[in-house]
Image 1 (tube, rainbow, N blue to C red):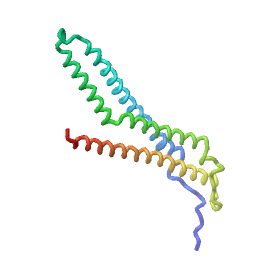
Image 2: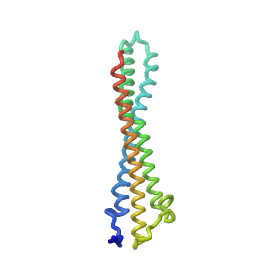
Image 3: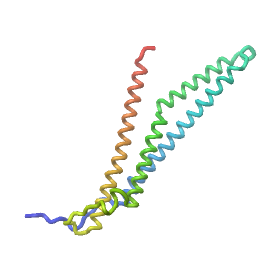
Amino acid sequence: MTTQPSSKMTNPVTIDQYIELRLDAQQAYHSKKAGEFQDKYTLLSRTQIILAALIPVIAIIDPTKHTYIQLVTGIVGAIIAIVGGFMSLGNYQQNWIAFRTTSEALKAERVRFVTRCGEYSNSAIVIASDVINKDEAEEHILLCRLQNNVEKIIANQNDQWQQRREQTIARDKKNTSEPT
């Protein structure tokens, strides 16, 4: 007894639902996080630059007339070190770049899909001869390709994030275990 192929292919979600619920949501999330990391990195970098520029200005003030100058210089230097530590711990620049890269890759994948370019073009779709409804089969194949590519992009970002976290943890352990 041979089984006949189903005359009706059904997808658990439509292409539009997948784009809205997964692709667009992930792209928006990565774009938002990239902006947050960029803002933090920029704020902390500018703070470091401004404080570092203040040290020579403070240093030219006559310490005999203003006895607190050494204290102020020391405090400014300490704040610069603290800000640098926060930047290192947060990996803001690396995260900004990684999240922006993922956001842009997801946007590009969406554009390729919507414009039916590359592997999404109709000429790249091979329809099985035993499928009765060609339109449904095409939609199913396109959805599967889109889903596969989007998930690869997201998985790649997650792998890179995990690697950066592990490198940060290893670096921090090394720094705390070294004798001073």
